[in-house]
Length: 337
Image (cartoon, rainbow, N blue to C red; front, side, top):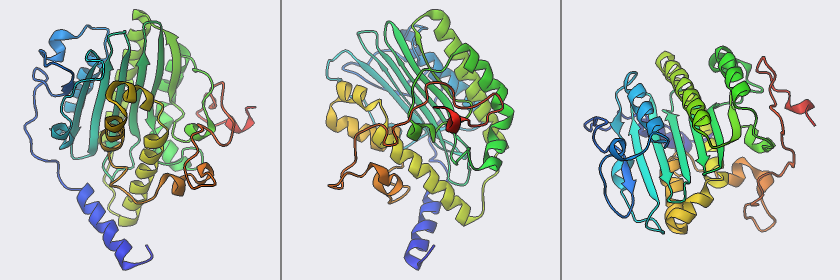
């Protein structure tokens, strides 16, 4: 920290991030804990949605997380209410919570009249914890599923072996189990790989009840593993390390807010303006609060001559067609051509 103003900003930021969760009543699952954005209000999700939708994933996540911590509604729960989708038929469910160790647990799920379903579920730790970010991104149509499920590393797992050992060494068997059952989904860019762990599930498969059930099992096991890590986590007291955690989370949010492929679906459902607000204020909340660095500051290789951001997914031009980790969880992408 080079100056007093920067130091003051850092301490103020930590104070804001570490404040206790707001004291709201912890609603039961029988109530409408999520906001459903649609043209009409209907009975609760548990009463109306088929078992094959992603709502059961969300219900399980809330039930399981409540076994480990006390969840209170996030202020975002009030801000993001319901709206009429552009087609008047697509339904969007949103919820957000916080807890002593969780800065934000949030979920957005979409159910389209054409059979399209989307789940974007994430858990972001508070700044004094270097926990991975729980990430579940599922996109389903009547014929195909595209899936990413991971404990996204907050810090580099290729070069920071201590961090990798701390959070992933004992989870490698879990990753191998589902890597076998849900094979690698094909090309993924070098830039994106920096935000994935050795246990990431990146897969594509035809829609079927059996595969949906398998994905549900994976989701449950990965979430339970993350919650166990949370239980064991001790808060960092070193201000400089807390600031490192903040910047790492901000870098992650900045990448996702700019390059997340789900933006297209949101624009189709909500329109350009509202989709942008959802991305920056809800899905990747913190991108405008946790730091001042821009996307170009973090990823200068994407800067165009006119100062704008290159819209390409990859500037390096390399992608991985097969899983770039071996069975010991060691990255072998550098030797894959």
